[in-house]
Length: 238
Image 1 (cartoon, helix red, strand yellow):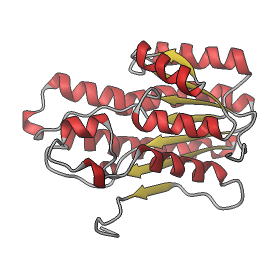
Image 2: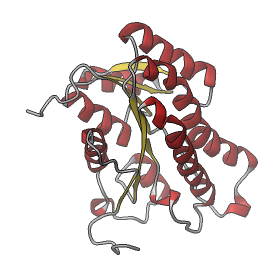
Image 3: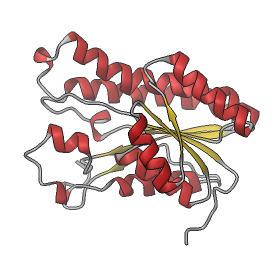
Image 4: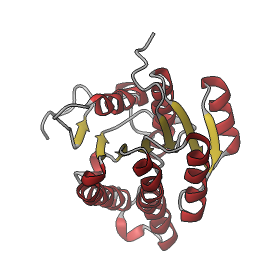
């Protein structure tokens, strides 16, 4: 039985119906939080919600109006918001010069603009509760650059910049912004984009969820701004 150190806390996980988002949502729930998950696929959300006792809300985070409505609903039901995990993400992997305008826009809209919209929406409900945590699920691609991953890397580098500025601006409100940058994780997106990879050697979504819990446990004078996760056996300190 997990220690319910998040009892009484309210959390929203974007892209929470599967993969890393679902693992994070389940783990937050296991530690006592009331957890809302949002995403675009109603059936995926409802299946996850029924199985793990989560609260599903359909939302396209590329629309600021829709994420504003979701956060307003949570605020009305719970009197605020304590934890936001910006996890929703999307990738198309090809050389930059071959990336179409629509592909570029989709990646930036979901990974970067969606993070901005959700974070901005969460601020008033968090201030109501005199503080909060915003944890952004970036990627090793927010720290590095690899061929065929240019648009995705640009969006994740943007997320890093967004996190740094929000983190500085929100300190006075006791709202802490932290970032987790995992390397290869065994998810549907990775399986589809990199069929050459042996998924058995990759990190699991639960490994990222554990890093989220580590961040949330930091309630003393020490705060970790960025966690870089690599799979065991890959090059350390690369």
